[in-house]
Length: 244
Image 1 (cartoon, rainbow, N blue to C red):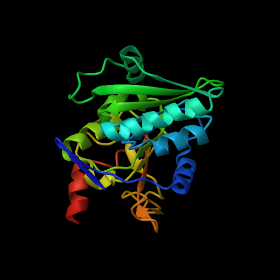
Image 2: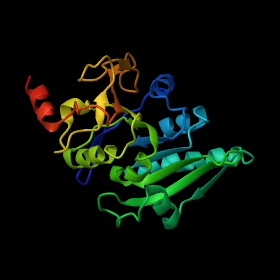
Image 3: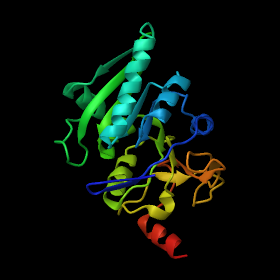
């Protein structure tokens, strides 16, 4: 589906639950660190990752659409209400949001802004699922501790640049599951710290993954952060790849 708004035109759909399980395994998401979802929609992937990966420290999702964020927030509240002995849910204040993203968020409407936040906390472990309504660039802080990142959306040029700049903060060994082929669409002047996964094939994995819009499978790409080897994804290469 396409969702249009002021300067926004995001392609939106969902990964099927069985697909999410496969991807979590491929990304090593249950090996510690944070799991992030940039463009979480109604939060289905974020919730599944939180419940399915008990070794992940935190799961953080960010969504620009208020309507979809509201659905995710209501789901967190229902889960906490139904299982009060296991979970608590509460609104995140400005200080909590600032601590999470590593900085005070810019005013609403600006790049990197966060309008609202909501937390689902697991009582026994203290682990949290954090839901944010705001710009993708707000997650530059959490990305620095990410083990796995989901990017199941297509972005307009301005948002793409902000998202790609945020990915540059990801630590070595972090893996990114992307609907966009970063190799072809990288636009930043600096080279990416990411590399395509799959026997050195620089254009990335082209395996098919079942989605709400294509149950027989749609191509996604997996990338891994590794600063110890020469860059393989640059804006110049992206131009050449598209031209070819």
